[in-house]
Image 1 (tube, rainbow over the protein chains, first blue to last red):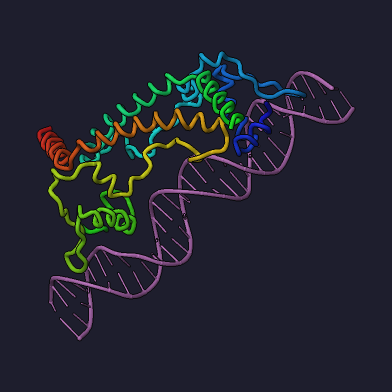
Image 2: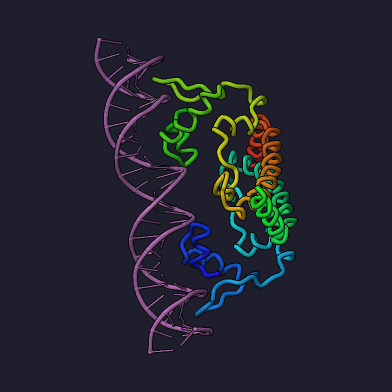
Length: 122
Length: 122
DNA sequence: TTTATCGTAATAATTGAAGTTACATGAAAC
DNA sequence: GTTTCATGTAACTTCAATTATTACGATAAA
C-alpha cells in the first residue's frame, strides 16, 4: 500500500504517513519498497505484534495530557504535588501498557473480519 | 492571595489565574473578594477536597494525550481499534481517578510541611 | 527512458493554550 | 466621595507543537 493510499484512508498527508511509517520500518514491523508497484508491506506475523510494540516503535510518545511541569522543581509545593501525581500516573501507565501488550494486530484483524462479515449480513 | 501573587508563584499570567480559579470558585472550593485586601481564599476544609474534586471542578479535562480521533467512525478498522483502546483507557482512567480521589489537599499540605521542616534542618 | 515510489529536508499552515490588553464592577481606605 | 486595589470577562495577540506542503534526490519497475 502506498503512502498516498494510506494517507487517503487515514485522512493524513502522504509525507506524514511516510514519517510515521518510517518508525515502524525501523522497528522491522513493515518494509518499504521504492519504485513502481512499491509501497508499504507488513513484515511481521500479526500475532507477534502488540500495540505495545507499536507504541515502543513510535518512540513511546507521552500518554498523559496532564503531568509535571518540571521534573525537579525548587518549589516545595510543586514537589509535594509531583510526588503524589508521579505514583498515580506510574500506576495508570503500567496498567495501560499492560493492556497494550496484550492486544495483537492479529486480534484486531480478527475483530475487523467479524465486523466486516456482520456488515455484509445486515 | 491575589491573582497577581498567585501568578508569580505559578509562573502564569494573572488573568489566566483568574480564569482557572474561577472554576474552583464556582465549585465552592475557594472564594474571591474584590477590592482592597481582596483576593482568593480557601473556602473548604482541606481534608474534604481531593484531587478528584479539583479535576471535576476544572471540567474534567482530557487525561490522555492519545485517544480516539472519531467517536463513531464509519471505518471498520478504526472501529476495531477504538473498541480495544476504549476499554484500556477506561480501565486506566478509572484507576487514576481513584488515586485522585484518595489524595486530599490536607495530605498535600502535611507533605509540604514535612518538606519545609526538612529543609530548615538541613 | 519514463513513471512511480519512498526518504528527507525545509518551510508553511493550523490549532489550541497561554498571554495580554482593556475596561467594567465592586469594596476598602483615606 | 474619591482614590486605590481587586476580581470578572471579553477581545485580541502570541506562542509552541503538530500537521501539511513543497521540493528534490534515490531507486526500481514498466
